[in-house]
Image (cartoon, rainbow, N blue to C red):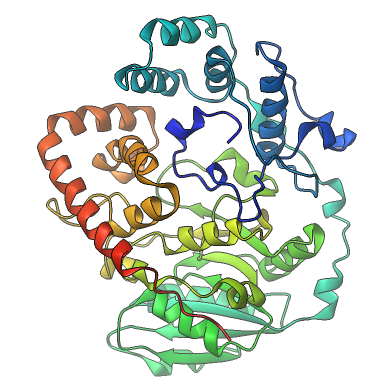
Length: 443
């Protein structure tokens, strides 16, 4: 990333990595179109002109710039005070202090660190996400892709959630876009084939005896007939224009992937950046439309994540590294119920840093498998340090200030247990890395 201190707060973020063609995701500031550059705010507290330039680039991406401007292939080292200035502008002071402590504890010159931290203290926190880049012609855009009426294959794995699946299928019946098939991979016990008889949908039903989420999705994709794959969850609710808005997004931005936002009824408040278009830094397999050729070109889901976590995260990262355009689409939103039974909860942990048992590995080994595979050892350790403490407290507190403070305090109090869990996870991740990816090709 343009500012190196982001490695402490976002150690395993997609955008930390350059893509396979050697480019970053950050647009070269001097080449941004004038109409977009005018919507950015220049920060005068930076000491170097290069920091001002990088800040505008980062800001453009975060505020929703999506275009074909050339991107940086390298970043220059910035003055220490500019690194702290950047953090103060965009992050809570508590996180800035966290970075200061990490720097000092890692034997950086404490005088230089404290001086730079102090000299940046007059920087005001930005509310940049409240003024995102708007695409005003979206509302009047006539999508030729919708008119072409391509077949879409909607993939729904399900496990012991028939009451919620009924609402899912009812919502699909109400879609104003009609050319789709629904491939359901049912892993329920008992299996109720008669459940599907009364829906006015083109359902292709598969009964899978093994409870395996990524196997289910991979199999459904392999037997799909559509030119587009729409991945969906069995505990979701969507509006009637859901499919249409996914297709419109692909057409509007000439994108490969439309990542619909997921509004959870459990957990933290909805992020501000869920309200506007932007380059997505994730794929949520409960609500995403992809061109089928993406699977043909980079393969299916890695089954090293089976019965664990982050299979969708790894796929999104793989797509990013291969240069596919993935747009976060606020108009293809879903309500994610996150119901308390069925689904992944019956296969394993549904939160990457929350083991089901106190003496289980923390984080889930597949999480460290991904982090170590793509980002390396140092970034993986930084991710544990940042993301593990919030996993100690109840889920609904994990992103609150109280939850963060409590998490760090409890982590220190039960440090021996935490170390045991992390070492166990690290060892199991090492085994996965030794085995290698289990990625099947799509022909």
